[in-house]
Each structure stands twice: as C-alpha cells, then as structure tokens.
Image (tube, rainbow, N blue to C red; front, side):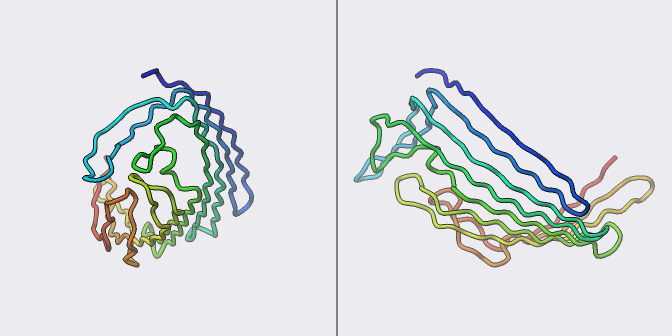
Length: 198
C-alpha cells in the first residue's frame, strides 16, 4: 500500500448585484495512489470483507453554480447546482462484486432553499434536494430521488440571553430513497430543537 498524494485545483468567483448574489466554482483533483476502501462481497453466498488497495490514478472534477436572492427583509431564496465527474485508471480488480468509491458519486445534484419571515425573528423554511442516479456497492445502481423538508425557526431574548426554538419535518412527501445501497432512509422525520446562546 502506497501513500496517497494529490494536486488539487479550485477556482471560484462571487458577484453581488442589488438583490442577487451569484457564486460559481470549479475544481479538479489529480490523485495518485488513491486509497480505495472496497467492501468486496464474493459471489454466491455473499460473504464479504473489507479490502484496501491503491488505484494508480484518479481524477475528480466538476463545478458548482449558486444564486441567492433577497427581497426586502422577509424573503430569501437560494438555488444551487453541482456537477461532478471522475475518471479512474484500471487496476485489475474490476469485478461485478467490487466497487470504486468515486463511482458512488452522483453526477448531478440540485438544492433549493426558501425562507420567509412570518413575524419578527420567526422564519418559515422550505427546502428541497435532488440527487441523480448513481452506482452502488455490490453492483447495480441507486435511483434518483427528490426530498422536501419544512420547518419553522424562532429566536427570542429573555433576560439578556438569546434563545432559539425550531420545529421541522423532513421528507414530508414520503419519498423512498437510499443514500447508501441497502439502507432505506426514514420517512416523515419530525422533531423540535431548543437552543441557547450565552
């Protein structure tokens, strides 16, 4: 096993307009002796074991575009798009029951977030996320998915101490999805949080 080394390049720009902020960034990672943590599952009975080995050369590259709009003091919204790709040199370990960590990355991702101040320091929040189809451990693939989350945050002061209370419900549409193959994510995750800032 050889140590992993890399050259990493990133370039970005931020532009502010009157009501709009735009941010763009790109990256390119050139990695030698990439250490792949590969859970190999043998065919047939399906017994598995972890296996670490080097991939001679891996390249990860992509970009991100984000726009944030602010209308007055009450409404804010952000949209972000991420595109990423990779290329990998063959190692001789390619089999239907093995996987590369870079293969598990989604090519396209989109995030949306909107916040509206209902009353002073009381924010209603709606967010959504799209993740593209991607490969999975043990072969096959994972379907694309979209999730929607809602919540409400309230800040207030009492006796010179700042408090925060929030309620939330994630995946309100009840989407069936997996972030890691074989592990279904829960539906309708609801809860509340209380915090204090000294």
